[in-house]
Image (cartoon, rainbow, N blue to C red; front, top):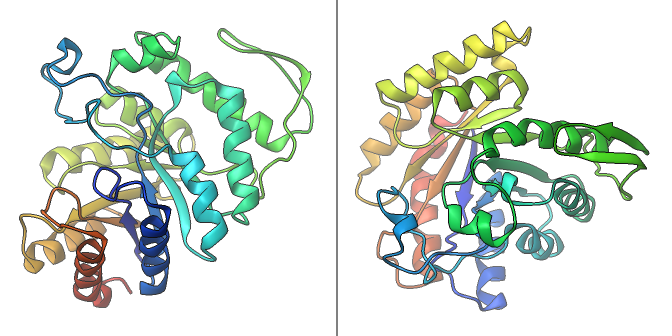
Length: 294
């Protein structure tokens, strides 16, 4: 069975807690299985050289709620829906602090956190947060190792290339030990990393030949690492903008053929003027896709 999630409309929902609450409760009531929220601590000003050539449009003018604090709020008002970062830019953050914050969200939500992480693309954020943009791919593997140790062991001693912990641990530790860690990635090297150490892959785009190649690479990497390829989850998405219901169904069917375990519905950049319109779009997509999820 494919699980269906809703993408939190970060840049369009505003800052009114009552509106955020309305959206979250409605999504849970509709029967969505999980909610995803993206992460940017800072945005560069429009026209900044760091944005040149980037496929992403987030700037200093983009409203982006801090995902782990947002999840603390959502944990208190929801009962069932899973909470997922998609993605948290892990290498620009302190590893032990992320482990602690994630554990707290998992505790407060009753074990409902799934941590989606990625490398990030904006050097402005890394510089402002005091982290090295250029070694982020190498550091993230050690970060995952350290977080999993902190989530599962009372006391940790670790001496790595970038991390040193001497007989210390976090408390409370999470309900799920370890918290599932999924990766967002597109580069071959990053896809291979997921096959070796990830619990799942967060795919971007439509189920075309490029993504089919990535799925194959993911499965082959998992097998080389001695893992069961099907144990590595695959989360893809459909968007309510610019496509018709037949496109949603075709994309879902193709993704399912590629082994997708989760499908996220996005409603941003579709001209929805308020939260009611976002919710109506989610409701419509769910009604169309629901017969195909079983």
